[in-house]
Image (tube, rainbow, N blue to C red; front, top):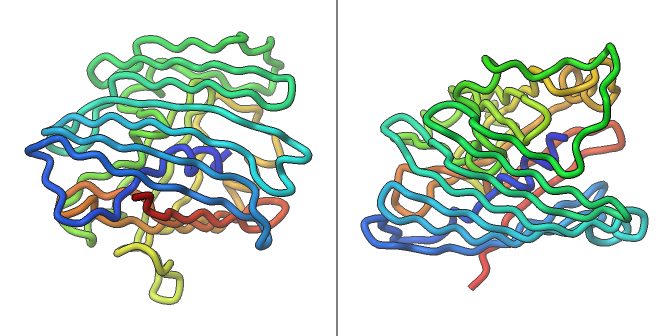
Length: 252
């Protein structure tokens, strides 16, 4: 789950001389690998104009992962920056995985989620399912918008909790600055991320338990040009089957 959030949420942040007084657009490719083998790729376009942003991307499984799980999809998000953070307006995700087709739409009003649509609708949940309550969605952002962080300096990036909602699961990513020996090479600051499931999941699911209790997650952030907006450029995520690594490469 955390890998999907990170891969979907990463946007280009390695352009120089950026000024959001005028519309600027950046592009990047994110590649994911497991045990050195490619497993996924995502191409993103990020547009900033004044306080507004629009993100769009295409993603797909890659390498040996594509043999066993052929996944292709698109995702978009738009919103605006506020004095202290980000306020999303809308999020869309459409993908196919094998024979499965999934579409998710999330709309926001103020600091709340106003509408969630999943097609097909989720199956009936069992007794061990933790449902999403209205209060869990206050201040939450979609997986794309949540990874854009407004901070006056790199020292201020990590000391926060990102409230992420993908249309089904609600998780907190608790960021704290990583130790000196844990820094990833691509960013200006590396954060340790603690995965805290809130709702929208089966409480005995082993993958969720591993991410919560045992996973080591590192995320490197860098500023978008010369702005105070930071976004991920590299990540390392411990999973049950090995460490997934994700890295961004600029596209001209």
